[in-house]
Length: 231
Image (cartoon, rainbow, N blue to C red):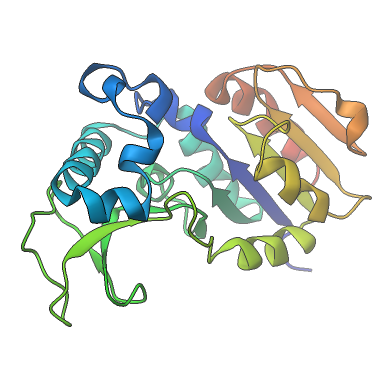
């Protein structure tokens, strides 16, 4: 028999332990801006330099950050399971920790895409996209980010993966908010599920769910031996 499919869904809480702040707690220069001022297509078309610089600074922060214990344990679990990570996070910390199969629902900060053809995607080796940086079609490069109001192209892929899970874990995000709250519904009723998050949640809402009320790194240290019992 092959390895069991372990599907791990991660949210902002796992990246926060590496020092990557969310939009809402980023502070400093960005406190004066609303999400709709820097995280929508309309905002980018209205003030391209501002939005480009916002993501440049986020990209710089990601490059200065390092994977934490939770990222590393997830990568280690590949030795025992066929692991697929589905993440809301746009950083590349899962990949840098060694995870091989990562689905990014909201895009990837270390990539740029054509503003004319979103299927034209380019890896970035540095933190800065400049106004005047063009794709092969001659259009301005934009962050490879799913902005508010845009379709989430990887959602169907993620749902298919979750529906075939043998084990399912949510880390660093509440099951009270979407997309995590919706995607868990696609996991088979009969499989074991875990939530690693310090927030409150009524686990009776979901069958076979164990809630580990810890931050991501501590929670994964608790969860790892439990998962290994499931091999």
